[in-house]
Length: 279
Ligand SMILES: C[S@@+](CC[C@H](N)C(=O)[O-])C[C@H]1O[C@@H](n2cnc3c(N)ncnc32)[C@H](O)[C@@H]1O
Image (tube, rainbow, N blue to C red):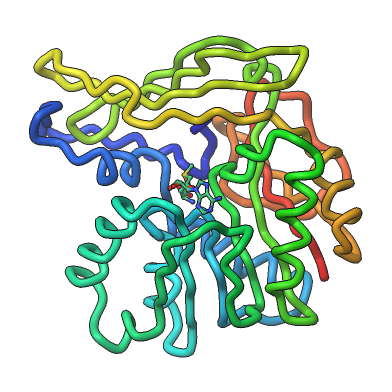
């Protein structure tokens, strides 16, 4: 994923890994996920928009359901539903649930193997679509259909929280390496087509012994822009769509990990923003 404070863990320890002994889902979580930070942002958005935190959530395209797992740990009345098409990633998630959640916590987390478009669930307060997963819908009608489906799964005062990335670098074919705990994460913007807006991005992992896992993950997406997504949210029936833009750390001049509602952004090389569809 493009680097932002959201996923910029740079932890270099003495430990080293090898391609053979590594688990791509674990490396993915270490590289691009920060569930605690993500939940702080969700709580802040809820307090801003509704004056309270939410309890029930649905994590669409949940993958390893890192946010849903953290959500049920965060507060004793929190419930979560994670939906993903892949039985393999859900099995990985179940093993993590068994290892890291107690029985009471896991009883508040449901995993559904299914398509987000046709997996109706009990209405929830908040639906999440993170790490740009809905970019796989390349046509307007597909995004619109997905956003309408989400709206129908939300309670009356519900919030749909999703993210997006962009910036001048997002239109380039380029690679970015980050050294992490015993491995290097490589974000490979392999292909960008200015006519269709389609991108092909890969994640590779490299190890100190010279071994590699190439194309551990591949994403074929359309690079949607913030105004397009806001317009589609409103067209899908959300009352309002707002953008949360990341603040700047004055010392480093980089993102400070705090996103606030904004009407204007900055033309930086790379950014990750949150959007909120307000029902
Ligand atoms: C980029 S990963 C995102 C994982 C996680 N949300 C995160 O933040 O890292 C995309 C996930 O979406 C799942 N997926 C793709 N199309 C889907 C669909 N129509 N319904 C449900 N899951 C889908 C894939 O199996 C994959 O696990």
